Image 1 (cartoon, rainbow, N blue to C red):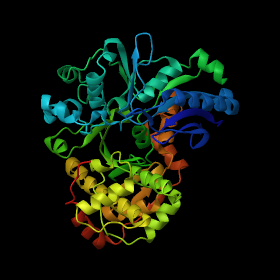
Image 2 (image 1 turned 45 degrees about the vertical axis):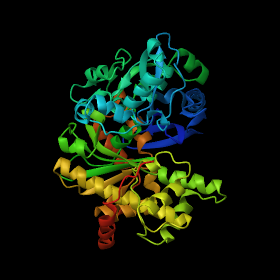
Image 3 (image 1 turned 90 degrees about the vertical axis):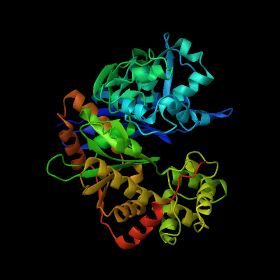
Image 4 (image 1 turned 45 degrees about the horizontal axis):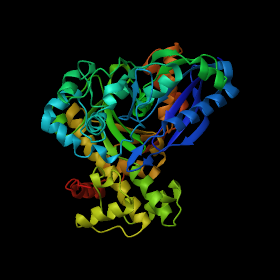
Length: 497
């Protein structure tokens, strides 16, 4: 069977890519056509996204795709991180430079919202984990600081939906990303309009929500002309990168094996796939989130401060004259002494520190632990703490679902960290299957392939992943030592920033 080509525009917090997925009906291979840097831009005292530059890079990638694959390209779709958004006017003007989710403007606004509506009411209306980065609190921040924007705002588009608008003119929001906003009602399956009105957030800006796999229209004629592409179909994949990644977990849908997943990248998103949102008082107490998935499933999960800890340590080491690639960082962590000190990865101290190693040392000092004294000890502290956090979250997820997990799938870029994979198996006492690395791009293009009719269902999609992707297996080791470490870890506080 001749290969058909699907284009994934995959935007992450550190980089963006335009990737071709070549599917022959049974196996898929990926070809990275264009990679470019991403990250916050500091404007005055604010953190923003440079969406104009990102769009320029995307068009460069599209032109490369046209040159290499031409008429074999079937469709294109975008996935990005969650929570961030763009406001458009009725005349399609961008209103302001879009904020980065780590911008400090939302500090205190989660508590302000809870003072108006209870945590219970907000959770029942959204099913989402309480985090100050959520779109809800970003909108409240803009309502306070720049109320004039809402006098002219006509559409709230989340980041991937904004790039779909640039591609084809669509003005809708896709389900998996809508559910990251804390503005979407998980049982009514629409925006939480009553809650939004109570918080004085204009509701007219919220557009139709569409399912993953929806055809959004043809590529704009102007984009096609500049790039050399035909008028491709633009398809909304699972536009939240984690939603796309979980679609590409190589789990069999038959049999009784229960599995959990970790989408490992800047964030570690650990969860289970559920037929419905879990909105129980216990889920609220544990601050669990319910985010949308493929085929009306929900990703019942916890956002964990993931490889961000290591990424920011690496940048700090470089600023101080020590250059490490990620492989070398892993090696020096492996050589460091085990179980010296731990951090609570979700402490506000680690959200946006000026110096991550200093923040880790401060946390250890304030909690009366041994302070990591070199780079290897700092990285080992971070990785061991992440693995112990995985165990804590796994226990809570199993308590909510009433089912014991038999295996953990780790997908995404962080699945390349063999030391963390082994730590996760050890801490959780579960086998770990690591891979595919490119889960997000695979999920993106395979959802497009299903829309085109080349695949029939989610089982077909995951079967292609199992046929195509290489994975590594890790068996639990050293259980007693990890149990002792966990007994210390679970009593650690979440210190304020």
